[in-house]
Every structure is written in structure tokens, then in C-alpha cells.
Length: 371
Image (tube, rainbow, N blue to C red; front, side, top):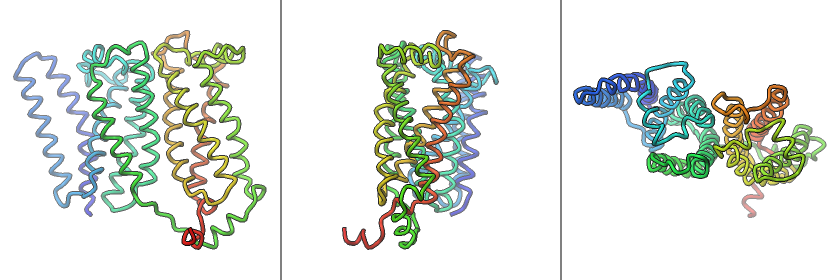
């Protein structure tokens, strides 16, 4: 397949920049002609981009078109984040006036962080998956990482919107649900893609015979999983208003953001406790017992989820949009960053180990036939 389709998506996503600026400029002119001109110009730009994108052979995979739209929206989210932090100006001012009533959640520190995550990390993943579709390669690994990241972002954002201080303002709820519905459908499509693993049966047998002492890296991961499990349960208990002195001292000195009234950190910690907690126990089993073929895929989904969660949590804990009383104290920031960065980075290393050396987690061909 020609690369023109993938190039067209990239060009289309960048068209969001002039489109946002054009709409913002014309809407403030307060004339019907300006609105009509803005609409016609936008349609013309989209038609030209789509024609360039599909001028040879249209991709068969429907996710190509889903990711093309999502890539366009990701750049818009990046523009929103940059303008809210006063890095740029005059692109989405009209949206902020609407959002102050219909979607006030976007102006919170957590909303800032997911705008940056979607505009940078998700955008890169969309382009990589589009490139893989264009060239006929498998994009299942990147897709599973995106699944974890997207699900964590969506669950925390929607539940945080519902129970936080802006819970009564759901002006764009239906629009969010349309985006969520399409994304969930894309998640199921990615899970249904065939897995591509090419490992010799002898390597699988040799890896399965190695004890834990002969796998020092796996031993280190097991040692990490135990305090990681305790840490995610500990923070879950904090947001459940545990009266323990340890919980109160930790909240006061290290992570006061856990008590932020926006409810995002509370939902984040509860989701992490209910999702990451069982994951750590299952992963312990997978690192001890050979032949757990679900390990590489599970670590991909979890690493994407924890990366998104920790980026949003760390950023929002330090962001100026968070009230000063809920920000991390300056004296505690080194410890806060060390613990939370490690909590985000080690799962990425575990995922890399499972994907690059999956022999221990696979079953020999003979065993599969016997089953």
C-alpha cells in the first residue's frame, strides 16, 4: 500500500492548527458571513486532505479512519493545553468560553495533564498505528499500550467529572460518550488482532527450566511488585479516609493532592487499587510459573495505564491550577518524584522484558497440541 494515506492523515491532523485559529478569529467577528466562511473553509480543507489521503488505495482496516479522526482531535487537545498555560494565544479562546459552562473540568489541573498526554503521547501512538496499517504491519503491541492508556484516562475522567465539584455540569456528556463508545469498539478490535510471536520451541523449553535464581532480573521485578502492591493499596486507603496516623502524615507531608475536591486523584487511586492491586498479584504468579502466555499482553495494557495515570497525577500534583494547599510541599518534592517516577517507570521495564524475551511465558508447541 502506498504511504500517501498515512501522509494524508499527518497533514490532516496538522490542519487542526489553522482551522482552530480561523474559527477563533471569525467567531469573534460576530457576523453570519464569518460563520459561513469558516464552515466552508473547514469543509474545503478536510475534503482536500481526505482526497490527498486516499488518492490511491483506501485502507481496508476501519481503525485507520478512527485513528485519523483521533489524531486530529489530539492536536486540538494539545492546542487547548498550550493555550490554557498561556504558551500560545488566539486559537481556542472561543472554546474556553463555552467550556466554562459546558465542560469546566478541562480547566482543572487534571484536565491540563490529559490534554498534554493526548496531544503528545496518544498522538504519537495514532501516527505509529496509522503507519503500521499503511505498510501492512502489525500494530497490536502499540494498540494494547493505547488501550491501557485510554481506559485509565476515560475511567478516571468520567467518574471524576461525575463525583467531583463540577458533577452537576455535564453539558458535553453525550459528546464524550460518543468518543468513549467509538474508542471502546476500537479496543475490542485491537484485542481481536492476531498475536505475532516467533520463538523456537527449544528456547521455550530452556527458559521454562530456569529457576528464579537463574533469572536475576525477574527476581528484581518480584521484589518490586510486593512494595508496589502495598503502595497502591495504601493510597487507596488514604482516599477512603483511613484514620491511620501513617495515612494522615503521608497525605499532609507528601501528597496533599489526594484530598483535592476535584475528585480526580481519589478516583485515580481507587481505580489503581482495584486494577493494579490484582495485577501485581497475577504478575507475581506469571513470573514464578512458566507458560503464562497472557503475561506480555497484560503487561502492555498495564504499562500504558500506569504511565498515563502517573503522568496525570504527578503533573496535577505540581501544577499551579491545583490550589496551593493541595500541592506537594517543596521540601517533599524529591521524595514524591522519586517514589512516583519509579512507580511509573518499573512497569515499563517489566513490559519491555516480557515483550523482548517472551520465551518463559510461552508453552512448547507439543504442549499446545496435547491440550
